[in-house]
Length: 123
Image 1: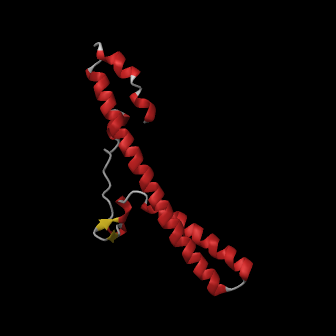
Image 2: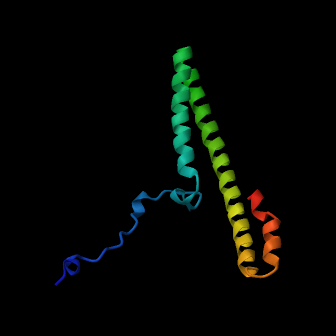
Image 3: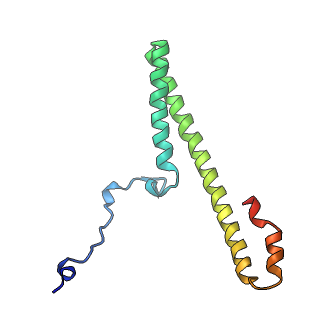
């Protein structure tokens, strides 16, 4: 027998259901930009709260500043990330259409006019 035959076949590990968190009927691990938004928001809130406490030495104001920073950074980055994701998706669909047209017209007289239009320059 070969050494390769002695090894057990690869097994597919099932996803552990205890680690899934449902928010408004959706698994939050599958929402794009959700994890990064909260990580940046938490770190921004901690930094904002600590800096406010260092400059004012007032814990209540520092907590309010930390929470305000957390909310603003989380929402701001989420909106920014989703906008970029939508923009990239739109450009990908546009590129697919251009590539399909190029494939269809390849070897014909229309291909040079498709290249002169510079359809890809704005993508």
